[in-house]
Image (cartoon, rainbow, N blue to C red; front, top):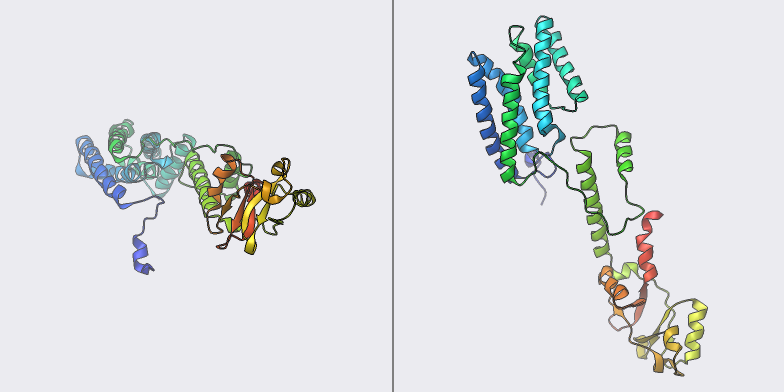
Length: 346
């Protein structure tokens, strides 16, 4: 059913977002901001200063509780980003008068230092302005108390909250499940880094998380494509067959001439009644009827992946795909599966 255009405005803008997590995040943010707000009021000399400190912590709470996997929501960016940015704001306030230029220098300097110290945190821009507006009269301890303490309390609350939310915090990317055997067409870590360099954009996700996401998707896509591949899509046509009344010598000649391992044996109406190969022809018997064995068959609409057990466990070399009248339409061999596995090399 098509979604009304106005309803699209209310779709989550973050991948993986769901209503349950957002509601729980709201509760966590309530507790975290209540504690940090209390510290603000205790540290402030008047109500205006308390209001200055609330906005950066409110922005930090959105990151810590709603997107805890973001690299910018981790403890060091949250504490270091806010504290260092507030310090830069105070330094600017002590060196030049309050002005639009001073505000720009405070925020620009905060971004530069946070980037160099690997603690980039968007609310740090607001913390830099808080330090600047605190003015030259503020102490150099101001970034530690109350700004740094507020950030530490918020991080501690987020850590406790995420113990119950089911999310990891501090976030550690889970290692992707390795494939049983490496496939030659899969991407490498170097390929991922080179692709990001080529795109030239910055994404709010850790490289480990991005790699895990892509590798899990790769495995899921591989499994889906194999399960959706039908026998009719994989089988080879143009079968070479032999009549049930033919001699063993005729069967041997066809096998050698066409370089195939198994021949379907056809009976009345062209239905498959058996299979014969050089192994059966090595024993006694003058006719195909005497030496043939039961065929391995499957309908064309069945999943091709369901045949793997026959190749691996039952030592079957060829599965013949048959119609409702048991007439052979094609054959799937081990070589056909090898062709599927090497498609990515083309």
